[in-house]
Image (tube, rainbow, N blue to C red; front, side):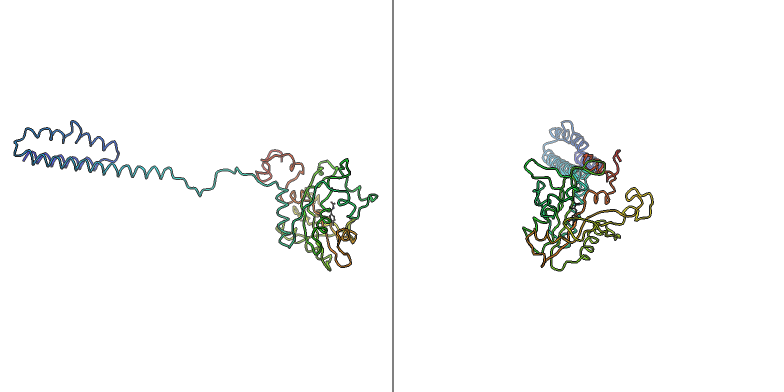
Length: 349
Ligand code: DAH
């Protein structure tokens, strides 16, 4: 029958068109071509009236079935295409939240603060606690109970900022020795990192700088314990085993007193023109000694039962040596790009 042939031909043509369609627009074109107002199938349906009545029903049913099929298949194909387009879009817009961010927008610790943290951490590993004390201090704690009476010439070693009421800006972290002994008693192991102030201002001195005090009080503390502690701390801080030299010195609060020299971290003594040690091979890094009995007594501890050692180390210098910073003033001028670039990228240097 020609109608049947037509129906089959339309189905074949539809199947073929559908197989070649890969976009929603192409599907729309197919829909128009077959079931649109002037579509092939619509034409056939319109021509039903011309058929003899006995054929109309059968052919009409076949055409309706075909129209349902076509609409179904177009819907299915539409869904498939939409799904795959969504998938493609998802893939192209996918964000890998585990990727590291571009650039570094967070802040960073100031190198001196970082140095404080590192040294305090090392000392905590050796059983020390971190103590603190006021920066506005009393003459008594800063000098007198550290065995520096008002007439003592050692006061000249530390030019002091005084307040009208007689208080002062602490010139060293040593007053925390007394405050800690009074607060905690013996035995005791503390370090105290913090700011100190002196009337000094030139290329190698600033009126505010940082120190870390250390104090160990116990029974039968020996000089070699102090030497071991210092070398242990500095080796851990610089990440290598260095040579040390203990030179006799004088501090009113220790007897005997020593200054510690450390092998030059830059040249190890092999460069006569080294910019860090100036060819000496040694760097002065700390003052220390066995705590004077008067100081132990001022801390309300019996010096016949307990003794101890103490040290004071300059943290700005430690930070400069560890991070290769050549000029103390860089710590204060707020040039963040210098520090963010690993201490070397800025023009200033
Ligand atoms: N307070 C001293 C200073 O600022 C450093 C120092 C030396 C601290 C010897 C000590 C010490 O605890 O025993 O120069």
